[in-house]
Image 1: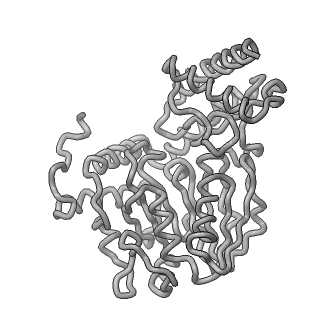
Image 2: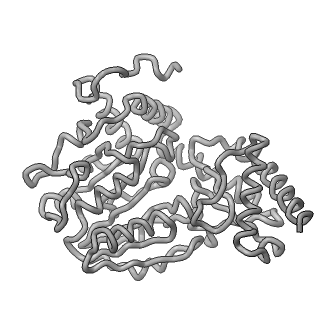
Image 3: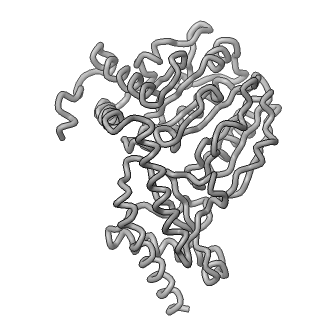
Amino acid sequence: MAALEGAFLGRSHRSAAGRARLAEVIERSKAVLLMPADWRLAIVPASDTGAVEIALWSMLGARGADMVAWESFGETWALDATKALKLADARTIVAEYGFLPDLSQVDWNRDVVFTWNGTTSGVRVPDGDWIARDRRGLAICDATSAAFAMALPWDRLDVVTWSWQKALGGEGAHGMLALGPRAVERLENHTPNWPLPKLFRLTKAGKLDDALFRGETINTPSMLCVEDALDGLKWAEAIGGLPALIARAEANLAAIADWVSGSAWAAFLAEDARTRSPTSICLKAKDPWFAALPKPKAAEIMKSVVRLLEVERAALDVGAYRAAPPGLRIWGGATVERVDILALLPWVDWAYGAARAQAEKAA
């Protein structure tokens, strides 16, 4: 409750003091993320989804687009381009869960849309070396489970999005939209062929609406959530900023990797160690008994593991995403203590053993 002392509640977000609080979220976020001074950052509605949709609907269509997907959210953005916006020239470059696509297929003369970290697959791009410095198209990056936990190469990106509820553990419904100079140029020189809803409009009279990047939001944000966001940012600053946040997430991944290396049944969904996410850590069962199960039965076993962990209050909400292969998804971001990860892992072994025993007994 101490974090709420002096909270700006019961007042308009459009007042001078309300705008100052929102601007503080923007400036502290830029500072922690080491964002270049010539980038713009705005608070937008509808979480990361809203931020990505605003970028796609506002900027795509000026040239061909490559939609790169290796999990459900990337697939959603691909559907936006091909089914909703009906781009005349849109390619999809995809891979199944657990793998990255062949990134050498990407054409940087085109706009490229991708997730930095596949939240539902636990697969991330290892670095930005595959992104052309001399690109003609825009690099539009959904970084919602990467920001504040992974190093983002700002010079290789043009649009970056994330949400409050991911890496700093804030409340949902609020997104962040970061624009580099090339993205601003696109907005000011490209008029989409489709109408833009009010919530998507970033320009006025052909120029970037600067007010949005000073804390004047398009919609009404929760000022209680603003206080929560500021509390998370101040905590990040206090522990050492971005390097400390990255180190904490990587330590959590390392703890699980040590456990997996000695496990008779658990494996990472991400096959390549370089691509394993330290935030959305996705696991599968590798033992022959599980592999021989039909997919519906395998999914049922993993749901039993999740239920057992919840009943014992050892872990909550650790089931794999509904479209992903049956498995577990453990959040390992910087807000999670390594000691808690270490305490959880014996429970996971127990729950899997118990779920398997129940299944074998019922067979």
